[in-house]
Every structure is written in structure tokens, then in C-alpha cells.
Length: 400
Image (cartoon, rainbow, N blue to C red):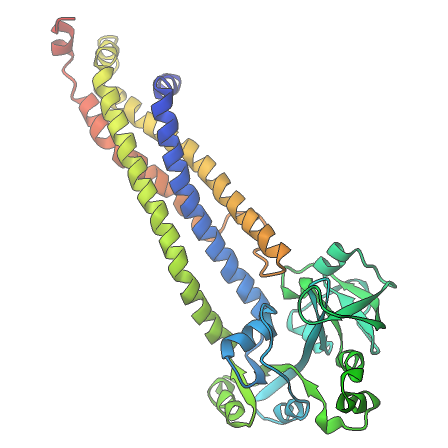
């Protein structure tokens, strides 16, 4: 039965190839949407870590979240270092981690912070140790891989958060550690002490020169602070307190990420709808092809019945053709969908953007073969019923 169904399926190679292409494109689109959405959500959750609130300069909360958590945007400005101490004194704050941005190395952002930032992501070192003094740096796994830097090497950052900025050749960082790959935002960052950022920018103004010498601690600035709540009550009270302070703006990463996913969701729904339309067109095409095949093979089917094949077996032969076509399209569709996601991941990696993760099936992808199976059975139902109801006597007596 399987061999006969396979021969029948490819007896019209052009029609079969067209149906296979339509099915594959529809299943690939559905697979891509499911996998990409799942990977994006997983990547966002991974980068959010345990950060409950981001405190930055007045501006857009979305921009503050993108700059402070995902490092995908420019920050809204700087805030006084005294803000960090004020946050730590709040009874609702369990932890406040400072961050200073402004420089980069080959497009990878240099982040001045404390070792507590590593603890937010439960990061581990693959080589070396954490910075213990200014101008020491720990590289993310992707930074080390792309730059070729190793422990003991020296490099100079450049001004700005993208490539092409003015190089700070007089201030060399020493690589003292490399982080193990985690798939999080840490992989694409260069981490150092906040004092390193102050030292690099000390000569840009008289005020910052005073900062470097430690003469004006109150005027020192950081870019933002990452906050963890001590209790759920902090989510209700702390953002209001922050927003009431002059020059400060709070951003709740969970809330802003949900807003971001709603904005992106419109595009994924359009793509998913496109895939469903392709599948509907493919199902209709398969139905027409099978119905035509039953009419064209009436003599063959009658001969099978004469040789002792029961009616249900003849009907199963038609259904088996549709199932074979759906099975082949499922394999090709899953492969094409995963290939598109892999291509998207490489494009995002080149732009040093969100990481999507590795290969493997997502939780929702089991729906793809199920969808193909249901569509094949629906398309084959009426042609198989026609084959089941064939009148063998009439067909054999019909004039040739």
C-alpha cells in the first residue's frame, strides 16, 4: 500500500511538487512565527533576570528599559551618584546596582558597574577573575570570540555606543577575565569598574577632572541603577517615589517588555495569518488533485477491487497519498522555519542585538505536524469517500 501510494503520488510530478511547495511555505511560515516568538520571549526573560525597576534620567521609560536592560538603545542621560545611595536607603529596595555607559569596543558596550551586576544573571567566569581595580575589564563570551582578546591583553575603548567613535588611546583596559557563555545580554558586553568610566572621561571637562581626582563626589554621575524589590509592595510604591524626584524616571522592565511584545505581536499575527492562508490554499489544491486522481484512476481502483482489495483499503490508499504529502511537507516546513530563525539569529548577532538561543523544538511546534495531519485528512476525506463508493460492476461494464 505504501509503495503503491508513493507511485500514485508522483505519477503527476508537477502537481505534487506544486502542492508540496504550498504546504511547505505555509508550514514554514507558521513554524517561523511560533519559534521566533518563543525564542524572543525566552531571550527577553533571560535578559530581564531579576531586575524589577530601572532608574534613569527623565525621558521615555521604554528607552530607559531598552538601554539599561537590553543595551539596545541610547540612555536618556545621567543621574547623580547620590541617587544610588538614596535608593539603597529605601526600605523597599533589596539591591541597587549602578551602571555607567558611554563607551564601546568594536561596537560592544563598555559598562561600568559592580560585581553585583554579574550576580543578577548568576554569571560564571570561563577564564581569569572579576575586576579588582579601575581599568580592568571582564569580557562577555561573544566579545572575546569576536575580538580575539584573551586574559592579559590590553585594548582601548571608543567614545559612543557604536562603532566609529573617537578612540580613547591614552586609557588602556586590561582583560582580567572572560565570562562563560550564557546566552544573555552579558555575552555582548565589556564589564568594568565605574571608576574606569570616570577615569576615561576625566579629561572631557574640568568638572570630570575633579571627579577623577575624587574632589567632588557629590557631582559624580551614573547612567542608571538596576533595582530589585525587597517585597511586592515595592512595585506599587517605589516607581511613584522615583518619578516624584527631580530629574529621575523609573521604568518597570516587565511592564515595558509586555508593551513591546504587544507592538511586535501585530507583525507576527500578520505573518501567521499569511501562513494559514497558504495552508488553506494548499489544502484546497490537494483536495482538487486527489479528487481528480480518483476520477482518472477509476479503472485502476476497480481492478484493485476485482483482485480482492476491500473498499476501505482503496479509500485508505487515497488518504495515504495525502498523509505522505503532508509528512514530507512537515519535514521541509520545519527545516525551512528553523533555517529562517537561524538566519534571523545571525542577523541579530551581527547587529549585536537580542540573542534567540540555540536549535531544538519549542513547546508549541508540536502543533505543526498536527496541523498538517488534520489538513491532509480533511483534504482527503471526500476523495477517499468517492473511492470507497465506486461501483465496480458499472466501471467494468463501461465501454472503453
